[in-house]
Amino acid sequence: RAVALRLGLLPWSIPTILVGGTNGKGSTVATLTALAQAAGLRVGTYTSPHLQRYNERVALDGEPVDDAQLVVAFERIEAARTAEGAETIALTFFEYGTLAALEVFARARVDVVVLEVGLGGRLDATNIIDADVAVLCSVSLDHTDWLGPTVEHIGGEKAGIFRPGKPVVLGSQDMPQSVRDALATLGSPAYWPDDAYAAVQGEAGQWFWRRGAQQIGPLPPSALEGAVQRRNAAAALMAFDLLGRATLTTEVAARALQSVRLRGRFQRGRADGAQTGHPQKRVNAAVS
Image 1 (cartoon, rainbow, N blue to C red):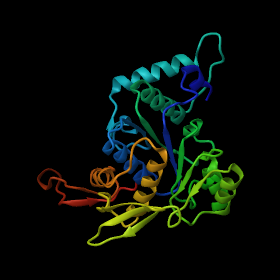
Image 2: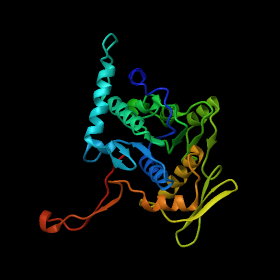
Image 3: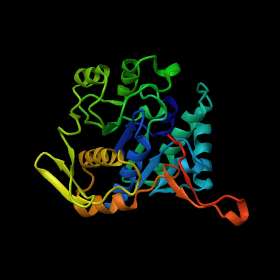
Image 4: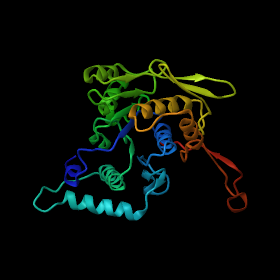
């Protein structure tokens, strides 16, 4: 936060959705990015980890930024953290990268930012941003050495991304009491699945998204594989609608669901048998 202030990044003014949780973050972030693009908004997306190149973590309109943009951001961060006449501030790898992403997005003047929490929430570097909408996809045991030994401990850490009075989208009804307590303490409006919003089964694999009296559809299945993707997509639609930067229509949602991509997540790949000796194979990479 101190370096972000030196860089002039705070207070942050770009509409932002911050996505946390044990499972579902990657799919939800990818769907939010696709929704923003389908609505004609310029979107900056920060994710982790990367598969092949660091640049994948910082994307503009779904495409990794180039080396030059990252280098400029890194140089500005280095100058800010070691500024003459001020205390030198040490940064971790992830803190450095998070600041670089924010710097790139600010300079690109994007319309919307989607941030994926790296680990936990309360003490994660992304949490220097007071998000306009927070999404908590799920809570189960993960990183217990850092976040605590029980789902109650972990839920409390992940709920650290909530802000007083700011909306929170829950991706599952199965949340620990610590999450519910945080919502009550902060007075954050909570949007629960099958309550505030719902995915309603249609015909021939199609479905409808419903929020109160509002309904859009029929919608196609998500291009991402797995039955859970409808739940993730419904949460993403709720968060995007709450952000209020564009009108959510059937056309926008359908275009996003058909175009969404997430590399390495149940992704179908083909290896050239003549070169590698391997037949066509399906890649099931476990990427957070």
